[in-house]
Image (cartoon, rainbow, N blue to C red; front, side):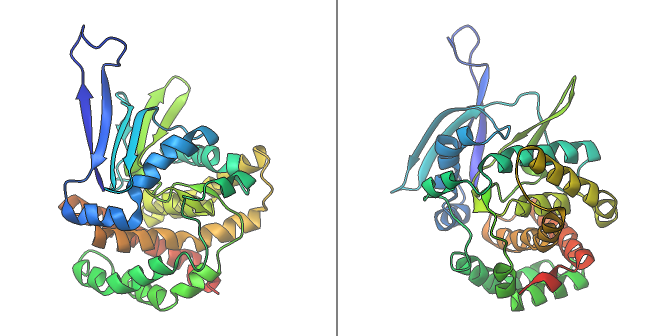
Length: 314
């Protein structure tokens, strides 16, 4: 949805500037640029750095400059360059240590504003309601047939059939949403995480806040876990990771039961499948992008099947 450049400054002439920064600007692709207007992603990311970053404790790049023009849907972000960070690989998947560190960052993102009255002051952020999600439901229904055709050879028949059932019953998914809400990333996956090995363990920096919104925190958890492992690996680690998230929330004073957390995790396996379908049909098509979206669809689809997610729809 955007272009990111590393800008390196000449030595001895940069004054108080760092050695390098990352500059993020609008996409040069017409389709991605059109999609950005529909999704408001430039407004949301600049708004996160302007108004939300200071309210949460998640580890994200320091923002050195932010500018957004609503009329032209234009923006510039100048961010700290995480020079020693290694980007996660969505296709290869996560190690258990990376996943644990990432879950800890989700606690730092979600806990500070969990059911907080401060959320009401962020009226520019999308907020999940049954009515507000109508556009996503319509979009999913309009693009799914094209997705199924394009990915027929890359996504299993069982997962594509699950997608058809999801499309037919999508209203029930949004009706099943829980009432708890907080700030969510909504695209919390390995490609948007930068990992640095330190003396005390793995440090994570979370980037790409173009989809930030107000919704249920477990959407990020289910999305991350489902996308980060193949089905066999996920089955081995998911209970431990979701328990780690629950323990972290409770430690930070959030009151929520384990059964509610687990049922929400099961329900929100759907979020990754929807993202794989919709995003793949909106953004610029690349070979790696198709491989990534196919992996997401297969992994989240199997996650939904294993967890009997459709049975939670209302």
